Length: 335
Length: 251
Image (cartoon, rainbow over all chains, first blue to last red; front, side, top):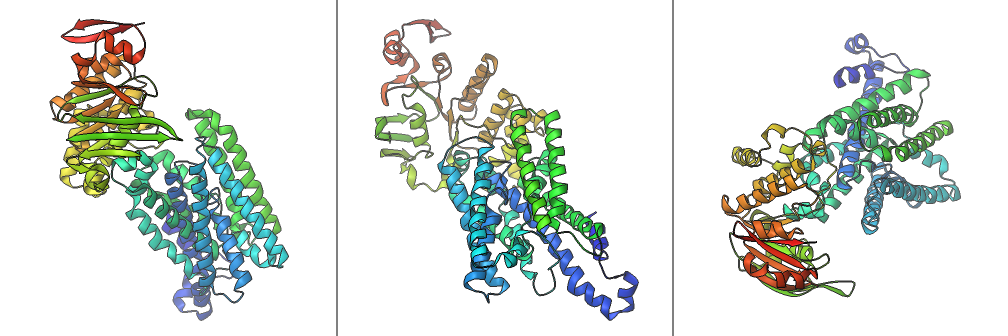
């Protein structure tokens, strides 16, 4: 399914590109294909895989189904890093900015996790709420600096995720997702065990803190490399791992590939919708994902409500979803 | 061999475990009993390296437990704590597979799979091995955790209140399993128990704690007497002998 959609996606766009043209060796078409369409597809796939895997890792390590790059302050920290890079090194390259984003995303996520470990509240909903608050504080600081130094225009590129700027030469960074995801796969069992708790991992001879921080760093780096290239993409890290876990369980080795595949299909479909709805213009993917994501999220909640036992938690969850949807819509309007 | 000398633990300046020394007999079931807050679970945490100690020595196989490599130790000593409210959607088999982690680090050999099969069979979990643990009853889940400990294949098995939140049927079944771990598989089992009669009926040695100190330690018959129990729990006891073991009655 992913393959079919991928191929289809290659031929959706403002300028007509078709197979026969490509095979005839139409220079112009080939150029569009190589400079724009193919990079875009690859970026989409990497984004989908990366964000959903990052979400999966974070959910497991924090033992909380509502932690994700969005609700764990990772994305906002990465954005803050990018802003600082733009401020202090205006001439910085993509890689320079990425470095800043990495460092800040990792630091932000660590601080968040250190914080929630310090305050030992066991409430499932409190943890993501703290994450959202923490993330908003960072975003606030980011915006303040952006306004002060008149950078908000430049920054908006990284605040609302979209693929329209993905062209050859300025997206390659997103490939970093691939080795990081492979690394995550190698350590999948470690993450699982750490997700079962400190005592549990100690009993099995696994170094809890080391694996925890390594896993968070991997998730943060994946997120950061996506944010640098594409911008903020919420929801995927939250819903994709949850959806897969509902059907396949939580054994990471078993679900990582499913999660990655489904994540990329999800982003791909959203991107195609975004490009088709008001063609020849396109809507930022963040808007589409916000809408589709919130619908899926609500559907998921209703499903849980009908089939699950944890009804009490649901009320707050849907509030959460609404909030995210609203912010996603707002992002879209600004564009 | 496990040898504990002058173990001390303080929380916020309050001494929870005060200069505790004892020796765990090998190949036997030893139960730690005592009133709430007597320090049983803390001692259990310290001798299994889950909790850092403030003073004292824990010698495990003639080597200080903190100088053991974590991975090596996890092949010799397994601990199951009472807080196993894992919300993860794992199947029984996947959970038991984690018991092999110290040996294979996730790359299971045919040998590992065989041991997992045996552990599942031992706990009579084969028919539900593909069910998710969050869909099981408390008794089944507890059995799955014990199966994991069996798969971990350690000489020492430490269980912190294994009968907690089980009904009488499942609790007594759990205690029979503990007995079998010792008698059939030759393991040294150390338990923290609240229920004195389970301790009296199923263990070989009893170690009674009061206020962070050892009040009595010895064989079941030595410890479970009217006078000792009244001293430990501050409640009047009657002792009856059933199947050659002292059972206590209290109200």
